View (cartoon, rainbow, N blue to C red):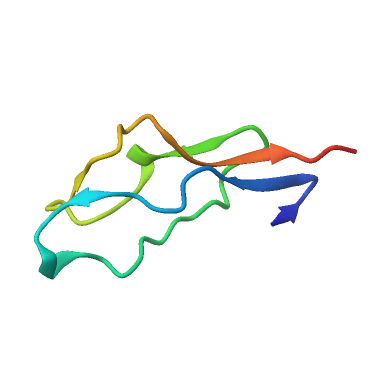
Length: 70
């Protein structure tokens, strides 16, 4: 995906949680509209049910807005 001279670099497509089966979310919605070129979304930025325990370290990137080559 490319916009404003930048592309979305998907670093991780899935995120692992430890949780009861009945609260596994079908998806996690993420708003990338506030990210600028060079910024990233890390696992700790994700919003999810408090009973879910993130297995991935919170500082690990999920996506990054990368500049496109011109």
